[in-house]
Length: 385
Ligand SMILES: *Cc1c(COP(=O)(O)O)cnc(C)c1O
Image (cartoon, rainbow, N blue to C red):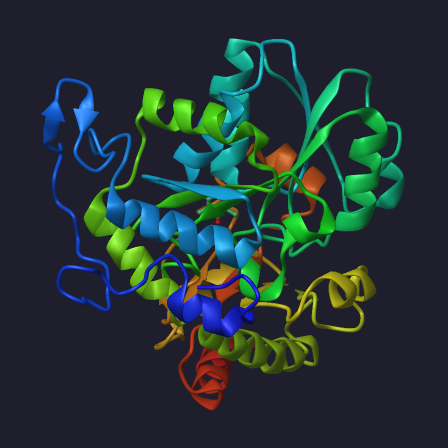
């Protein structure tokens, strides 16, 4: 696959060419832990041990690298394992400035584990341009999510890259919500991209995984060393499933985005809804930035009802949206961030970020959008007068 081919063509083909021996169009699942050597220290085909090298994982890694415009990619047993492995390449005392509206598990990893090993974290609302200026001295990394979870905040990636460069820092973007089909941070100058491939990249809610992509190949060996030394790799079977999902990413993201736009407009106009958070709405505070740096606005919407009690009644009326954590699958999901995905934050922390008790988060699937809208109507009907 040539990098000159367009995105949708690479989504279908990158990472694999039909195999020499059998002509297999799809990568075999190389379920082997080890590989034969012709003489001590001379592995026959360069492969020694599957934690270090596995052809099925390499196919996925290469495909993701192609789609993100990366020099190289690494995949892991989960998104958290990818983030953890990246941060292990930093040094005690290094300062990391992170967005304050962050996946709850990332916040927990930073706060409860990485901080104990000497990384210093500071959280800021990076959707505001003024908070990107004057990064504290010694900042080594800007760590951000855009769109963010659960409030769909948008951070200006060009401004973030300029601010980091001026401070001598690098930039890591968790691109889980947008995927490379809608946003490619490395092309805008970011140094690292993180994915929970569990979400849109896998796309079918049947596999957990993570990825780390590097813009520059200079750190390839160092990151590979950490991937192998820490050992949080994905299995060949999981790599296969994730690559199978990836092949339709471009089509799925189009449908997720168009259906979410329709539902967001419906929610915005609904008298029961206090606020609707969706970057595709013209009244989103960073709608213009989203238009400039994204090729679509994605399938995630949050909206605020008057109370948690009202939100719980709303859920009882739903038949198609399943109540579950996670996101990004073909099926529509709904959850309440306060008691579910963001329960590890204190009530004060949630209030400071703006996560209301009545906030509802939707992962809009690829079902018929008219059926999804009718489902939301059932939810509102259940709230009652
Ligand atoms: C789910 C998620 C993660 C963590 O990924 P896992 O695969 O669950 O370990 C990280 N970032 C974001 C934005 C996520 O949605």
